[in-house]
Length: 84
Image (cartoon, rainbow, N blue to C red; front, side, top):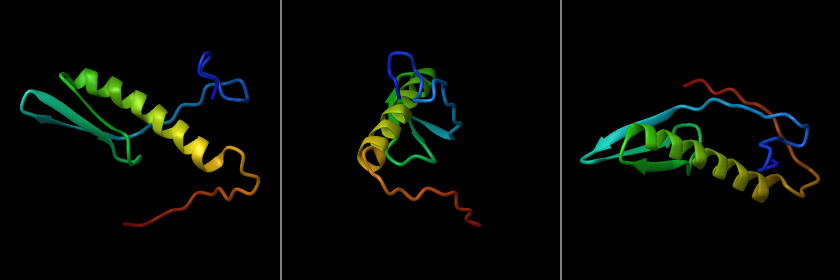
């Protein structure tokens, strides 16, 4: 991901949708991303939590890429479906 231009290696921006959960805890709000363990945040307003979660999503995805994919030659990537 090219941080300055917000572009990936193909020259276009990728967008994904995630489900966030925000709860009020006394004077603060806390939130997390259902599909992405490790992406959580807090803020004084719901708007602040949403913005913080967007940043958390980017950070978790970039970290996962660096630690699990970058520099690896043999990578298995596929979609799976789970009925719950």
